[in-house]
Amino acid sequence: MNPPDNGVASFQPVHRPDGSATYTCPLTGFNVLGAVNAPIELPARRDALKPEEATLEVFVKPATSSPAVGERYVEGILRNLLGAIILGREKGFPRRGVVLTLAVLEGGDSKATGRGSSYLTLLPALLHTALLALLSASVPMSMYFTTTIIAVTPSGEIICKPSIKDADEAASVHVLAFSSKGHLLLTESEGSFDFDTWEKVHDRALTICHLPEEASAGNGKVEYAVGSTWQKWLAESVEDYIGFKYAYEFA
Amino acid sequence: MSKEAPLSLAERDFILDAVREGVRLDGREVDQLRPLRISFGREYGHVKVQLGKTSLVSRISAEVTKPRDDRPFDGVFNIAMELTAMGSPAWENGRQGELEPYVTHVLDRVIRHSNALDTESLCILKGVSCWSIRADVHVTDYDGNLIDAACIGIMAGLQHFRRPDAVVKDGQVIVYGVEERVPVPLNITHKPLSVTFHTFCDGKRVVYDATRKEEQASEGDLVMGINNAGDLCFVSKFAGAPVDAMTLITRSSVALNKVKEINGMIDKALQSDLAERAKKGLAEESRAENDRIIA
Picture 1 (cartoon, one colour):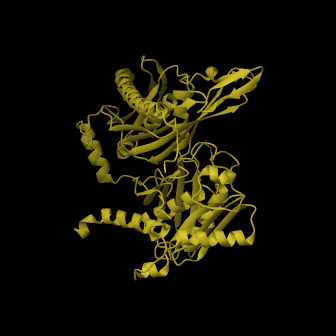
Picture 2 (cartoon, rainbow over the protein chains, first blue to last red):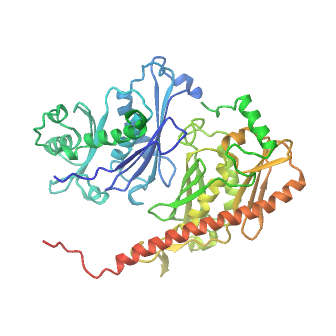
Picture 3 (cartoon, each protein chain N blue to C red):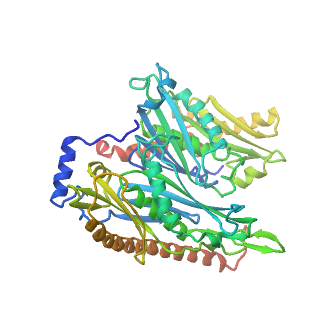
C-alpha cells in the first residue's frame, strides 16, 4: 500500500478561541475549521449544567446553508464520542463548558453538502478537526482517537478513503473510530451489508487507523505499512506543531 | 461568557488620551485602514477577508427556487450571518447577541436594499422559477469593524461568483452544469461598501476602522454606505453620543475616498484571481494528448 495522503492539518489559524485547527481532506475536498473554548462560563445554561463535570457543547455550521437536522445529527455523534474521552472532572472544568464550533468552509462539491444527502463522508473530517482543536486548546483527554471512512462497492470490494463519487456509488459506507489503544469507539454505517462485510471493514479500518503495538514499542520489525496509518499522521501533525510552538525550548 | 471582557480603566484612559492627541494604539493615522488581504478559494464565490486581526470567510451560493407571489419577476437574495463562538468567546452558539441583529441589519441595508445585486436579472421564468442567491458570512476572528469587513467579503464574493447558465426551452427550464456551459457572472448594478467611524472626546475626534479595544472605548459610532459614484445609500447613527452635522459632511467625503480605495483593492484581487484561473483553464484545454496509462 502506498502511503496515502491523509490531508493537511494546521493548528491555531485563528486568534480568539482557546484552541483552533483546520483540516483539509484531500479526497473529498472538505475543509473544516474547528475552534474550542474551554473551560468557559456558560451563564445562560445554569440549569443544564452538571455539578460535577464539564458540559460539552458541539456546533456544526455548514458552508452555504443554515444548520438543520443533518447538523444536529452529527453534533449528537460528536458529543457522544468526545464526551466519553474528555476528562470533564479535571480541576477547573466542573460546572464550566467545553464549547466546540466546527465550520465547514469548503465542501467537496455542492451536491455533497446539500440537504438530505449523507453526512458520513464529512464525519471523519469533522472528527479529526475536533480532535486537533481540542489538542490545541489543551483540553485533558483520557485518550485520543483516529477515524476513517470505508466504502463497499456492490461487488463487495472494499475502498479505503473513498471519494464522494465512490461513496455515492457504494452499496454501503462505514465510518469507524478507534481509540489510541485500538478499541472501537464509533461505528456508523449506511446502506445494506452483512456481518461478514462489516467484520472485513472493521479489520481493514483498524489497520488504517491504528499503529500496531510493536511499532509503537519500537522494536523495528513491523510488517504493516506504518507510514500510512492515521495514528502516525496525527502524531506527526502534533509533533510539528509542538516543535514550532516551543522552538525556543528545544533550541 | 456572554459579554466581551471590558477594558480596564487604565487601558481605557490610555486609548482615550492617545486618541485625544491623534495617536492610535497600532500607530495608524485616524483615517487609515488596517492591512487588508482578500483571497479566493477554489470555488467561485468563496472569499477570505483579513482586515488586521479581524478575519472572515464569505460564501455565495445559488439555487433555483420559485419566486415570491407578489414579485414574479424578481429573484431572491439573502444575506445570512450567524456569529459563533469561533469569532469571539463572548458569542454563544445558536443564540443571538446584541451585535448580530445590528450587523445583519446594516449589511441588509447597504447591500440588499441599495440593489447592489440586480434581482430582476435572476428571474428565469416569470412566476415559475428564479435564482436564489445566498451569501453566508462565517466570522473566524473578531477584532473590531465587523460591518466593513463583512461588506467587503460579500461584495467581493458577489463579483467573484459565477452561477450556472439556465435557459428556457419550450416552457422547460434547463440548468447547464459548470462543465457544459461557461457559468455566468452576477449582474452587479453598483458597488456599495460600508464605512464605519467611531467618535471620541465629545465627537471631536473621529476614528476610522476601529479595533475591538477602540470600539469599546468609543462614545458612539457612525456608519455610512456609499458607492464609487459617491451615492450615499445608507447612513446610520444608532446609539452613542450625538455627532455634529459638519462631522457628517466631512466624513462622507473621507468615506468616498475609502470606498474607492477598497473597491480598487477588490478589483485588483479579482483580476489576479481570474487571470490565474484562465491560465489553469487554458492549460487544461490546450492539452492535446488523452489521458492514458503509459506502461
